[in-house]
Image 1 (cartoon, helix red, strand yellow):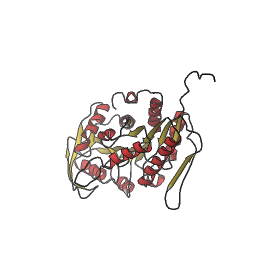
Image 2 (tube, one colour; image 1 turned 45 degrees about the vertical axis):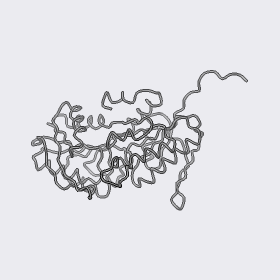
Image 3 (tube, one colour; image 1 turned 180 degrees about the vertical axis):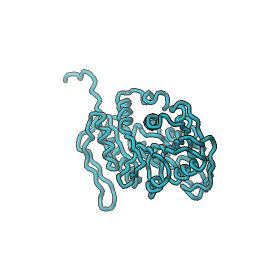
Image 4 (cartoon, one colour; image 1 turned 90 degrees about the vertical axis):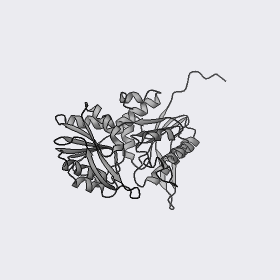
Length: 326
């Protein structure tokens, strides 16, 4: 038998879950590949079945899933996809979760609580994921929960570019909606050229999630355009109260900017009826037409994901994409 010569060429294959297939298609277009065809459906009792229609042996597999509602279903589907790839001899499996599920449950606040963000990492490792790629984690410590490389991407350049271009002549103050987001506000301020920052000091009742008890503004906002920055907008309650508080303190106008548009329940109505001039989100999560409103701007995350996938596939540097911001 003749000896094999050379090394086999690596093969990049992209897989998309059913939660947000449009995002996978957009990423595929930027990568100049096609989303690998698959058969995926639910059994009558809710169990999920997935089978890929092409051989995946020896490939570098990237499995993309957006974890929107119903979040537990889409987490399970991505786990099953990873398991199927592992059993079909994929060489390396990267689980791409633009919005990391259960990220807000990253520590124990009281006794007998879970650390669910760690459990998610453990489940994906057990399923066979070699690597995780995600965007704007709720807290950076989650990177340490996964026993393997974690590519933590930042939407900051995308969001700041939009704001700086659209409001280039405004006197901007970057506002953190609470004291825990001041580091994010500082990064925003540095990127926007050193503008001042402020934050809203608030107290919460630990027994009432998503509910702020009281708040006050710390910093100079009078007569300035305030950009309220956060990693996600869920129910919108905190953001709407922040907008009202800033306007009461004499802000000239308020912009809201966040990476993940969870937009649970009546959040779109709350945001539409508040006095924010614009709400800027990315499409890490699908924002269907029913959740859109006039002040909403949605920026595409697919180009960033595609560039990061290219760097991972070519054994390059993901950090280099952010010029020191990552």
